[in-house]
Image 1 (tube, one colour):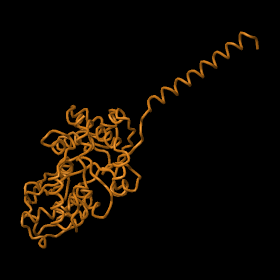
Image 2 (image 1 turned 60 degrees about the vertical axis):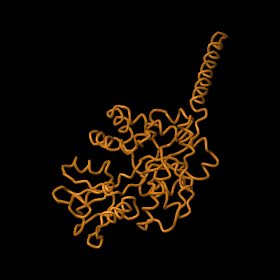
Image 3 (image 1 turned 120 degrees about the vertical axis):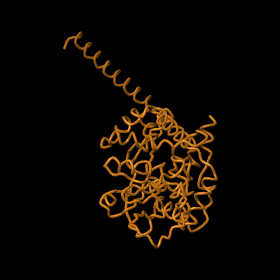
Image 4 (image 1 turned 45 degrees about the vertical axis):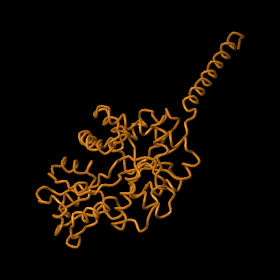
Length: 334
C-alpha cells in the first residue's frame, strides 16, 4: 500500500471516528438531566388521559428533565399496589381508593386532582322508563363492589331514600355486554364515556347523575409515596408541572388535534367516539379557579365523610396526611 493510499484510509478512519464521537455527544446531550420515572394509569390509553399523553407526546416532561414511561393500568396492573411497591413512582387512582389505602397503612399521598369530581354514575335504556334512583326498586341493577362507583351508588341510594332491599343487585365489571343483553337494567358507568359508547352502538339511554342528588366527591388523583416526596421533591414538582401543562394544552387545542394525538397510542379507538368523550371529560378537569389539578381540604373531608357513612372506610383517616398542596402551590407560584 503506497503512502498516499495509507493517508486516505487513515483520514477516512478519523472522519468515521469523529462522526461517532459527535453522534455520542449529541445523543448524550439529548438525555442530559433526563431522570427516568414512570406513571401508572388507572386504565388503558384513551382520550380520558389526554393530559398525560400530551405531556409525553409534546415533550413537556422532557422539558422538565424527566423521561416518563406512561404505563396502562387495569385489574392486573393496579396503581395503588404498584406505586407503594416501588414498581412505579407515580399513579392515578380514585380519591376514595387512596383514602382506603391510607386506612390500610399504605404511605400514599395525593399531589393533585386529575378529575375534580368523580364521573361515576348510572345508565338505563330509555325504553326501561328508569330515570331516577327511586326507579331502581324492583329492577336488576349492576353493582361494582370495591370501586368508586359502588361508594357513589350507596351514597346516592341513601340521599334519595331508596330501599336497597327492594333492588336486585347483580355484580358487573367494565364490559357493557350484560347491559346490552338485558341481563341488567341499570349499569354503573363513568358518565364521561360509557353512555357515549352505548349511544354509538344504537342504544338510547337515560343517565342518572349522583350529583343531582347531592352526592359528589373527588375523582381521580395523581399520587406518589411519602418516601418519594421526602427524598425527591424536585422530581415530584417537575412531574406535576409537566402533566399540568399537558392538560392545559389538551383543554385548549383543537379537539381533532388532541384526538389525533391519542390515537397514536391506541389505534383501536374510534375517532368520533373519542372526540365526544373529550368534550364530556373537559368539565371534570378544570376547577372554578382555573388551575388544573387544584384541590381543597374541604373536598377531601367531604369525600372521607361520604365513605365513612357508607362503610367504605371503617375508621377515621387523617386527610391532612392523605394529600399535599406543596407541589401545586410551588408549580403555580412559579
